[in-house]
Image (tube, rainbow, N blue to C red; front, top):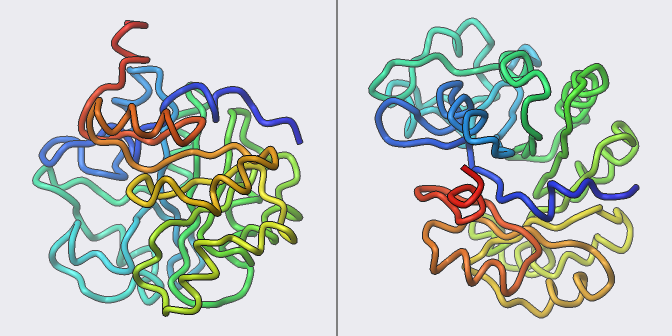
Length: 248
C-alpha cells in the first residue's frame, strides 16, 4: 500500500511529548502536548488479562508506577485502572482513551508489545479499534509473527517491522532479528530501527529495496542529524526537532 507522507516527513514524538513530572511517557497529558505541537506520536499497546488494550511500554509497572511488579498480562483492567503513573498520579490510558482524545488530530504510530509468544488477541484488538477510527494510523511490532498477522487483520493500515540491538533476545534470535530476514515473507511497509545501531548493513539492504526506515530515538539535534543521515524519518524525545521549531 502507498505509505502516507507523514511517516517519512514529520518527526514522531516517542511515547508522546513527555517529561518526568506533569507529562509522563505514554500518558494523556504527553499526548495532548504532541497534539498541540501538531506532531504525530508513537505509543505502546499491550493486553490486560481480560483482553483490554492499554498503553504501557514495559513488561510490568514497576518503573512507571512503582507500586506494582506483576506482569501487565497478569492484571485485569480494573487493577490497571487503580494504578497511578508519575508524580502527577495519572491513570494508565486504554487504547480507547487515546483514540477518543486524538480523534484524528494527528497521526498515530502504535507499537504492539508482546513479551512472549502468544495468540493473535492483541493484533485483533488493535485492528478492530482502528477499523472504525477516522484518523491516520500506522502499526508496528518487534515480533515478525505479529507483523504478518497485522498485514492480514489491518490491510488498510501501514505495518512496520521494529528492530535494533534486541538485547533481551537470545544470541541467535537477536542476530536473526537484527538482520530482519523475515521481511522477505512479512513484507513490512516500513522499518523502525534503533538509532544507536545505525549504520547497519541489514537496514541498508532493506532500504535499498524500497522499504523506508524510521530511526528511534533521537534525543538531541546532533542525534537528529545522525538519524537524517541513515533513515527517512525518526522518533524524538527530550528536545524539539527543527521541523517544529520552524513551523511554529
